[in-house]
Length: 149
Ligand code: 4NP
Image (cartoon, rainbow, N blue to C red):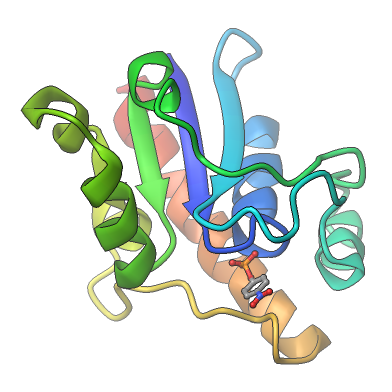
């Protein structure tokens, strides 16, 4: 099973989601992340995301930002989007119903009824990154339970 986490820049939310999910799932699962924009392509995650993850024993410092590609819709079984704008953008890139069905809103898929969107912490501070981490951690637990059940 292959899982792709997607946000806008692939330097804050989806790298965290990738790191958290990798830490929860057995090694035979492939977890990756991508962005809808290529602005940060090749860059490591935001230092605040790296710090936040490391505070929870997760190393995301080696990840590199990349934009989502057409091939991702074939490679991955599930594509989890961090917010509605990203979801809309990713859906628009899918070429058929089979591909569209793979694209989900992360928190909705996780059954979080209070929030549908993982807030963008890019313009925020460390507290915002920690809140995003907690939201993603709970969401990844719920998705992991679905996948493994
Ligand atoms: P992310 O956060 O989508 O969680 O990686 C952002 C990163 C960069 C920008 C916006 C959001 N940006 O405008 O450059």
